Length: 548
Image 1 (tube, one colour):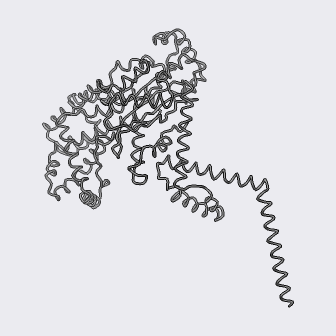
Image 2 (cartoon, helix red, strand yellow):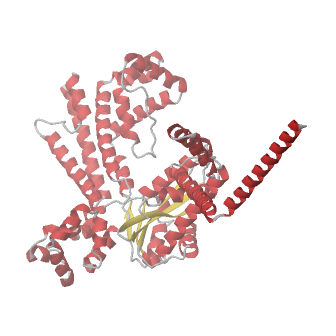
Image 3 (cartoon, one colour):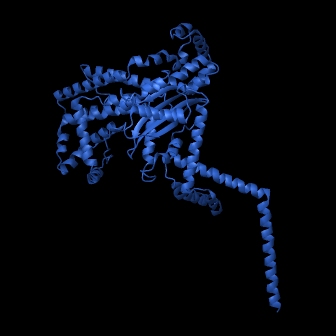
């Protein structure tokens, strides 16, 4: 009986304690401190979700990466460094597949709305446009924009259009009009620059897309033929005998890379011999830096490839027994490597047209110098290190070397002439007149300023500007565009003139980057058949300027 009373008393005590706990919990949940802490945690989780989604888009990852890779990895790190309780808090962050997809769309819409708000303010802008076909054989047109905002130029994606397979030039212009003027409500009068490649679908006499765009701007706009595309066209100018060497090298690469077993056997052979490179690279006409790398790798692996081709009983092995062919291959690997280096200098965002022009004109002068070197009584091959090393390490008959030298001279002369055709002096006369933009403090005297043919008000501004030691500091530390934007209030005439010259794009690099991103997005991880509208938010996030 006494035991039953004790048990009953204990049960009543437990019930009272549970009631007190429940009452305290209810009061805690309703307290401002708890609500504030809970709201803060929810807000932080929401912000974290957006930050993760932004990184997923920037890195072009699949939506599922957040939940399957990022969250488990973060929990492992937090659990290891802190404790399980802290790690469990990460579970409150919404990172599901659909959530990340919605977050990326929201971010992209915000970026697009911000871009439109800025452009609708009436500021000048420049565009670059390019058309390409993706891995799903869908023609796509990308248009990127550059404009002045705050203290520098901003580059961004303006629009991405799905096109019909058999679209005409007029249709292409109409689609651009619908998007830029109709949908985005922008005015062509604010467009001060257009950049595209020189392909027939843009500049041909039948398509006339660029011509129509210039007419829409009332010809108050500068068209730039993409520097990178021009340089790539120059690279294709090659004498027939050297072209044969290139074709044979490509044929050898395709023979080996076209079969997975051939690639593996060559890799095993190279590993056994102990060479640093064990793979050949694919050649493609589309990639900017393809030829130089392919030829260089073929030359470096020439002995291993020769052994491999003999084992495979391929007639291509006979090519490597021709000393003249191998010597020409050494030259081609050098010259295409040099052209690749120039091409790399012409790539990148926020490009400076003066710097690009300096790279091109510097290379043109180098071509002339090399021709003079080769024509001298004692020809020098120092500019072609692979060729020079090959000549020094091998016994090459003097007549053969003379023949190779003449072919190199023909090629260098052809390159010079083609560069002059694609980069004519008269096209850059306006930039040469505005050389003061690039070398501002070289004009300290009235006599030197008068020679620049500026209007009197501009001359006064330049004289004052070039005399300022404070502004000299800015000039050294800021980019060319940022400096002239900073001068817009104090020296408005020179600033406006400088910005109008440097605002237009010099290449379609941003569009090419966009196509590269589209190719990566339309993979098995995200779906190669996915519609453009599904990956467009990714593209907006990836191509938006980091300083916007």
